[in-house]
Image (tube, rainbow, N blue to C red):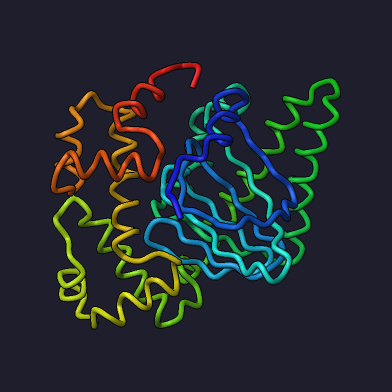
Length: 291
């Protein structure tokens, strides 16, 4: 499984500043770790699924919503033996700048500031209203009647207002609800990796730092995330490399050193293996406005 930047989302955001899917039910052969621009509102409607966002693992119930920054590595893990239905919206804050005053927009976006995502669990009546907003947004975009762009902006602002109000009422225990013992272990492992990925880590070092049996630690991590620890560690480093390649002019060798790779050659080989292009080619592509 690869970790990648979700290009359809980024292209849609570059063009329209919003990307939405309502009651999506398609099943993929794999669900890779990925990242993208903007913010995400993910609404779980039906099925059995867990969702990794940064350090957190969320066990989802129908009607749950996850909100997070798209640049945080995330991955859903649905049970493909049952229907899996979800809706989601990706958007850039600038999409609402013409409608929502800056001070209010800043406030409405504060629930997204949790680097590891935030869970919102809606009540029965609230679910109906949330699903109605998704339906109305899609209807406006499909029909393209007079004022449809304004209406989509207004519905999104309404949704963000509901999210902000609900987040202020929520029990803090909902941050990572109903975690099993294995998931709690994996949460600790994820946090350690995300805090120390720049270092020269080994499985023995991770296990020793967390006071876990190495073999049980590896078993739990693979069972819960679908990845080995070493593969996840590489993906975390490569995700940081992508950000640095897009946002800095640092030489490739210096980026390699800063994200914990032993050599630029190994870094470049692994980068191309996972993303299909060399680090320099990725940088060139992401500084091209037509990309």
